[in-house]
Image 1 (cartoon, helix red, strand yellow):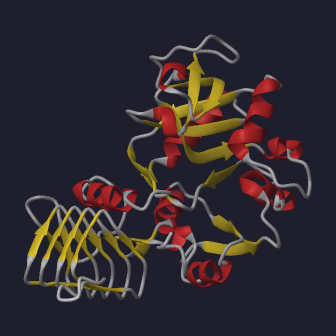
Image 2: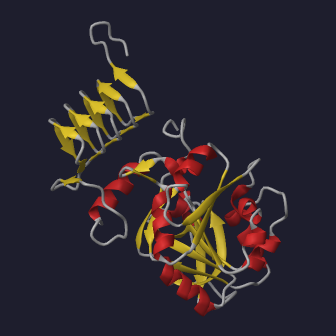
Image 3: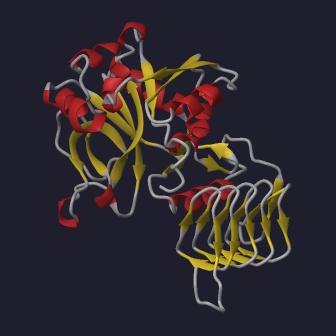
Length: 323
């Protein structure tokens, strides 16, 4: 919020494309022939968007929230072979084909994509072993999963490898999910699989991964995508990349100062933006620092460390000292 006030999180734009398109592209690149999107909140927008994809795809709308695993359980009759589950609200661009090879070679029931972070205390961490149900070896970047822990304290962190929200799963695993119940992959299903001694594998991925659950990660993700545009498999939009890594869309208008920022389609900057994102058709006549500005906004003041929702007008009346 407030960027999700009128759209589901997978539809938040990143370089002019919805977040969900990045993991979709990675799946298509891996040769997946069919994609099913499970959703609840504001699913109508996703239905309309998914209809534009060239790959065979559809949306399965939940009548009530079923959780990450519960929503996939609804599709059990269709999941009769190895399948891939990806989080639609993370910016992910990496090699799923390589993960599939590791899954088949390991003989695992579940294989999980991992990402290395400096501070694991805000995430679910994963401990790896060289063999199924073996001792944790913190030096490993891939191996069999031996332990999970959600949001550890700094002195509890046995790993800095976190769950990146992409899984390869064998169909029999979904039989462990209670039918018709809200159920979660990381908090319920995967610990159950582990407790049964079923082999679970994981591998640290290369590429890019950002959890955009925090709005300011939208800035970091887009700057990283621009930086890695020549190595990552995604369509870079038309525009100019400045020497400092900023991006200005071809249809944007800039006559002011842009520093370490993203300016998207139809936006205009006549003032100054620093460490910020200006989404489509918004204008900045003031100053925006470390801020995310939604679509169709106008900023005629100075803002710092703000997230501005769509269709907002921010102005400060200096004479009356009112905002």
